Length: 138
Image (cartoon, rainbow, N blue to C red; front, side):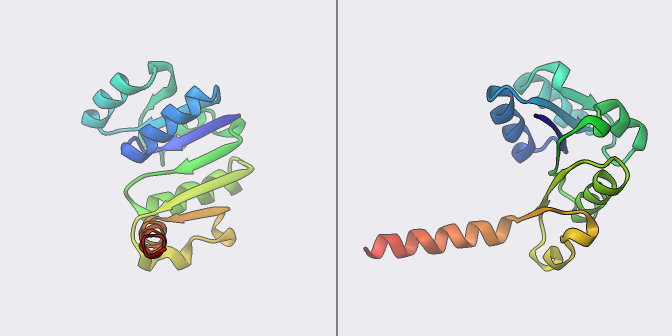
């Protein structure tokens, strides 16, 4: 499967590592120099595309038109939403997944904006903590 990951933070780099181990074709798009240094230590250089993930030329170079999945993992909800919208409606990527950083923005992340799966980090973690609290009582 061809997976495009926008952003190179900890979540994105860990995702890339997991997917590469599972033998998926992965491209991570990142523009921050300090993050790129870390990425080059953690994943193969051929999996890294240097540039702004919102730049159409960078998306083309990374293979957006051939991607099966886009995972928008930047620290900006606006960027993640725009990336999913662009991936779905411009590049025809069949599956889009977005990280939601601010729970108050969660209502925007739906199919009309090109988002198939929205991962609200605060909600996911709160749910896991609540579940662990309940399991502790058993």
